[in-house]
Length: 170
Image (cartoon, rainbow, N blue to C red; front, side):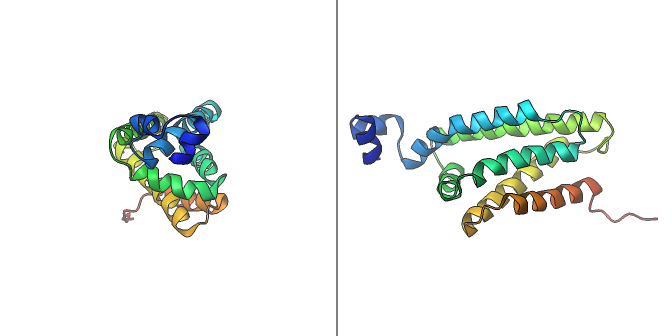
């Protein structure tokens, strides 16, 4: 925090007025980057593609962000997902916005007949997001941000969800 204050040419107390800890400062620094990534995801989403491809598009862009800076990503992920205080609320709102976007994609897929009419789109996107975050945390813990591996794992998970796990009677 001292180095940031010195670099910015301001007093250390000024930084603490706006950012109570290192996690809050890091989160503020990456929110703009993440928002730009989110805009790119939305702008390039293949809206006429099947839901599987749309979800993989989201995952590829998201994983790509974190894989592009592996050393920093491990620190950022730890700080971002375990932060408390007002910045935690900011992060939660961003997560909720992403979840809503994903739910809307799933509801559109349901309207197109790609997923079951009684599928709970909110629960599905929550499961997908939890899987995504879990893979990121595992990648950070192993210090191995491999985009192709993350996408292969995600594709397998999506395929399992789309095909269902219930035993079917013939």
